[in-house]
Length: 270
Image (cartoon, rainbow, N blue to C red; front, top):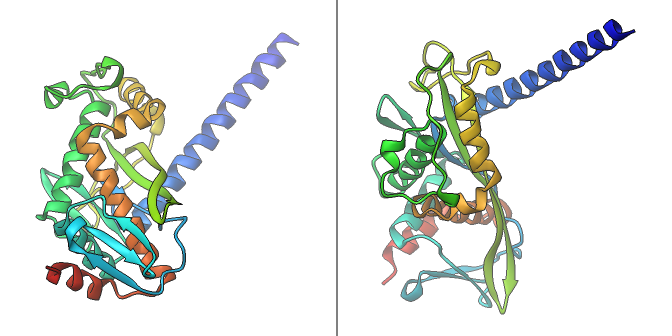
């Protein structure tokens, strides 16, 4: 009877492990299918929730604010120069993000890889990746939540990348002004395989069970204290770009507004 119980427990553990592997593989494959490669960096996803249907929109330079339907307002969370770049990029491609491949920036979608917006996303990725992989030298001068000191490892069984998503932006209307109510930062640690994708980026790998325990502990630290990590200035900038990108997608998807024309309007405003 005891042997039967042990065997049943082992079967359950194997089944749970197999389910986890399948879920991870599906997640990794879906990311590659969407982006063309596995992003070793930051990606911004999703359309804003909570806005009214927008029929008209104007940009007010004096305070970097959009006037919606002549009655409500959305203050931009990012500089005017980035506003135009995000609008223009999303007018061409729904994808937005960066991946660091061999110390070079690979841009997803139509974002300029050498531009100010991409640089802000790269800065956020460097912080997050340094925490997850325990590259403490890159974190000098940065105060982590709870004075956390990332764990380090001398040897990794398999290569992996951190994929950091900013998504789920929801807004509320207060006194005719739209404010961000909530958002999510989703951090993943995924194995990479041999070879390169057609864009030069990484491909999905296997054997998730061989990921470094120290890296996984660092990942859990970020996940369990997500809000506090978003408050790190470099990560805050990326989150705000994601916020505006979600607003831009809403304009395009629900209001059928021309983002390229709006980008020109923002650039020419004075």
